[in-house]
Image 1 (cartoon, rainbow, N blue to C red):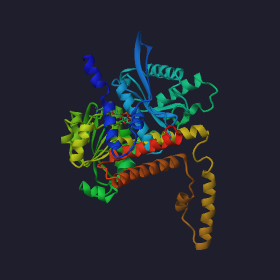
Image 2 (image 1 turned 90 degrees about the horizontal axis):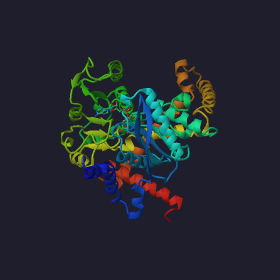
Image 3 (image 1 turned 90 degrees about the vertical axis):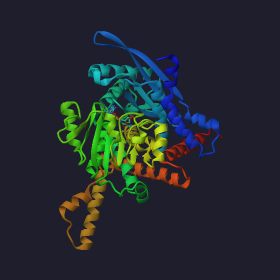
Amino acid sequence: MSKNQNKTNAYSFFNCIEKNFDKAARFLSIEKGLLEQIKACNAVYRIHFPVKIGKEIKVIEAYRVQHSHHKLPCKGGIRYSIKVNQDEVMTLAALMTYKCAIVDVPFGGAKGGIKIDPQTISVEDIEKITRRYTSELIKKNFIGPGIDVPAPDYGTGEREMSWIFDTFLSLRSGEVDALACVTGKPISQGGVRGRKEATGLGVFYGIRELCHIKEEMSSVHLDIGLVGKKIIIQGLGNVGYHAAYFFHKAGAIIIALAEREGAIYNEKGLNVSKVFLHLKNTGSILNFPEAKNIENTEKALELECDILIPAALENVIHKNNANRIKAKIIGEAANGPITPEADEILEKKGVIIIPDIYLNAGGVTVSYFEWLKNLSHVRYGRMEKKFNENMNAELLQVIETVCKKKILSEEKKIILRGPREIDLIRSGLEDTMINGFHKIRDLKKSSKIGNLRTAAFVLAINKIIDSYEKLGIFP
Ligand code: NAD
């Protein structure tokens, strides 16, 4: 690849987000300089460090980008993928800023990335790389409960987060809030119940909300509700699997699932848990007994369906395949799965697109709850669970006395139960996703904005401007 080509490709994903931002900015009368400040990445840290893998020394390329310091700490996942590059990390960090603003989570956006393929490296070596990366972040003050708080993303999960926490703790001993330096940790290490499935569940809540609005469903000639809706999901990782699980549970029909190696299809529906078990046992979704294989995985996106959920990587729907997409609704579970050119083609076709900067915000929302738990040093529900149960018992007694009737013990159990951590987390997530959706949709209608993505960007920009004004930076 020539130097020039490299340069052209180097900022393309970031340009896509800038394009969406600029479209939204046209609906606002905000000074150009301020818009430029919101768009710009505030800090980009690129590192190369050596790690001994087998008998060889390998130089690892890694990044941490803090897109916006308008609220602190910065927050965003860490991605492990061989495709990681500066442009991608900058873009994902920017998306985090807008996402946090939309769901009222008080963080600036950030993102991290390590250019490795975790599928080809041993667990011991992934641990070495993760720990070294963390110590590099500590050296430059790029991590900390009030500075920058990473979380899982593509290719990472609880395991990596617990290594990050452990490395931070060992180098910052005595830091009382050390647990809050990273989220997405296992429960035993200060994690919160419900974080693992949060992004996928948030995707479910967001799409469910749209599907319950008659006017929206009529516009794409669908009935309201989720039952019987035909769904295709790309990527059966953390986000894709959990989204598939909740849609299947709600009565939707998962007709196809696509992974790297190919896709599987069954018009009558796939049992998501069974497919996941098959994937675990065989290492592939292909050859699932109750489905047909589709060798070219990208073709799965083009099948007839009601809802398409890309939950793997960016730019999978582009100008060359957008015209062949038959879905009536696309829920962007992944970050940036639709290029701006494809976005325009799909909008002309009347497809409803629920944008990533809202739809996959469930992860950062529950990460926020985890961060608060870590800072308060107390589990959710610990103070009020027993109190609520006692109050409910007293109330029941009064009802039984007044009505002169005994309530069945099974019914009593349901009414008496005080909130557990998982109940509080899920209700906080559900409320956030429902409110976020209606704020975007209301703005779309009141400001006559053509689509939900632009409305979401307008909402985000307004919220960020508000914070700048509160900070008094731009009197
Ligand atoms: P993951 O690593 O758990 O899963 C990704 C899955 O996609 C893997 O199973 C992988 O094999 C599959 N995949 C890769 N290339 C593919 C291809 N070409 N076709 C089909 N499948 C392919 O990652 P994740 O955490 O589920 O993240 C998925 C997307 O969601 C990413 O865009 C990420 O940025 C976004 N996201 C994740 C979170 C989170 O909490 N994990 C939060 C917000 C957004």
